[in-house]
Image 1: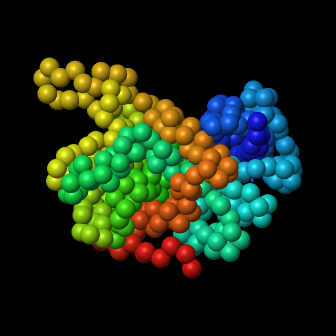
Image 2: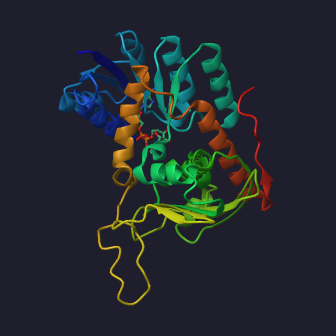
Image 3: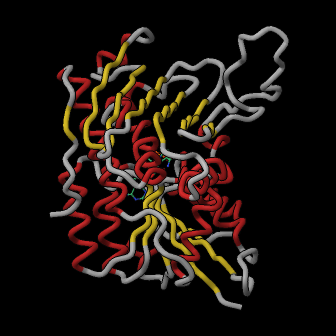
Length: 344
Ligand SMILES: NC(=O)c1ccc[n+]([C@@H]2O[C@H](COP(=O)([O-])OP(=O)(O)OC[C@H]3O[C@@H](n4cnc5c(N)ncnc54)[C@H](O)[C@@H]3O)[C@@H](O)[C@H]2O)c1
């Protein structure tokens, strides 16, 4: 039986989830039952020791110690500002890297990472987990198989129940870069087309502190694709009914909605309709539990050479360029063309 040793940097909000998912992969990958072993580090040492102990993983005191311990792959789940240096360190160590989105705090820095990865033959998977969600996968399959006909409209929705701390919002880059970037990624991935123009509007009717740090609590972008197809991408921090992530794909032949099930956080206004009957999701971790597991499994498969890279840094930067255009449109009030160049 083969061992795959993963090193994880950062066991905060999302890193703990990845740590659990990696630990759960042990012995379940087929064919051949792969042993997946986890080593981890975090600057918050005590917390990291506790996480490691709880999962039977090994704690290492620094990124350097982790990288020199003989890893098969590096998983980066630290804050965005540290991603470029850690991606480069993983590439220098000659191992595949999984890094949470986004590649960097801004597109200019991200492009220098793309160049570095390309020049050093690095393999880097970026964490756009929706690409592994069963509903989005089915919508893409159906569209590619021609079952929907041609798409006339797309409506993507990402709603948090409540805002994260204002300190986080102050350094998040804005609602489109933080939340809607997942929708921009999935729209490119699903349609196979580029978004060429964005026209955005936003509002602040919740906590005034969000406006004071330069963000909006709710926003909507009208996006235009390179074949003229139009769609909308909306997001809010105040969806009290639950965490609501959906995509409506309306085709000339058939229409589909991703995220429409008994846990959808919206009720029918029609008398007598009991759907959806379940309890809505409360967090992104709940909504995308299966997708986060599948994404980590895919990374191990990538390390083993069993699959193509499911989300390249070039893909991630292309989505970030759309998010940048949306933020600029929000600030200027006019439609903004999306820069198409993905690397220098
Ligand atoms: N794909 C998604 O759905 C999704 C969801 C949430 C967050 N994210 C991304 O994940 C990343 C982390 O977000 P989070 O909310 O988990 O942040 P967090 O602040 O909760 O956790 C980050 C952790 O990294 C540690 N850390 C920071 N710098 C370090 C370093 N140099 N060496 C070792 N440890 C270090 C911190 O101590 C902390 O424990 C962000 O880039 C964010 O954009 C992605």
